[in-house]
Amino acid sequence: MHALSRQSKVAPPAPALGLRRAVAAGLLSLLLPASPIHAQGAIDPNVAPRAAALEREGERHMAIDLLGRYLATAPDDGEAWLQLGRFYLYDARDWHLHGHRGEPDGLLYLDFAATALEQSIRLSVDSGVIFRGIAEVERALVVVEEIGWAAARTTLGRERPPRLPPYMLELGENLLASCPAGGVLLTGNELEALSVWYGSMERPSLDVLPIRPDLYATDSLYRLRMAQAMGVDPALPVHRALGDVAPRRPLCLSPGTDSAAVPALAWVPHRLVRVSGAPVSGPEAMSINELLKAARQNQSPWVVDVRGVYDRAATHNLLLCSSLLLLFGDTPPPACRP
Image (cartoon, rainbow, N blue to C red; front, side):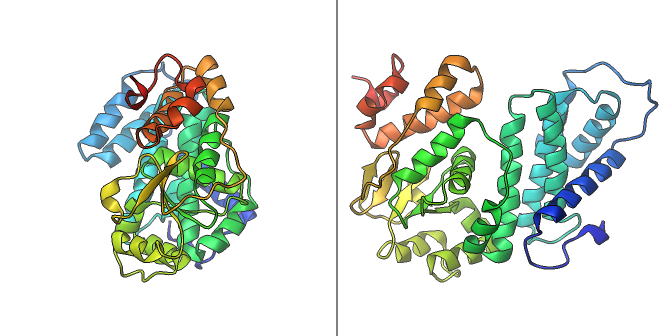
């Protein structure tokens, strides 16, 4: 494993990423116990939930071992591949929390996760493409920590990340377009962070700096790089850092952002966000066409979750009750009911 660790603090070029992915696929195949060619077993729908229960009990390595042994004989269980990919995502996050130390490193865990999640996508698991996107965001996080936001955005913008559903890309663009140019957009949950990061890559002209307050509080390297991007002292906690930024740049709170994590400012609702000071509308108009299409055609729970972001936005901005009437229809959020 040591030979696969990163040798320098620079973002790997695209060919190196492809090589890492190939190496990860090879290593992952080695981690799956060998079995006779004719020993392929039937899919057991209880294995993935059993592994999830083990992980919740603090036995992630045991859960990974269970899935590895099972997938060696039942490689067409997409839910098991999804669960395995999620566990490697958790390992990558633990690597951050433990001071970016240990082997394998975070990028190799993410390569393991991507390899497993691509198997779940092959087997048409609904959440596979979402978690595959999350793995790509986590990979981008490592690059940001290595070379900073501005350089990482340029580097990552040259690559083509796995595609997300159009309604999720639309959400990211709507959140970014709701924040004035040059603003700092705080995201409050993983769905918002995922859609905003993809939106930043798809529409670099939307000049907005996305910040994840949870990572700012727990990840020293992330805090250093994003403090540099905001021009504040990285020793400051997120609450005070944002207070220092507010006189110079608009701050924007996504619908899921915890108000307790931000300074007490005059927050003004604007489209999907709340803005510090007077909002300035940009040229980008909001669109919900993709979400409307998905709501008619798709039973995915992710459609419901994305709709929930718009519902939460309406609790702060009642103007959305009319502008998003087509979306809300006969089931408006509580804030829009008489």
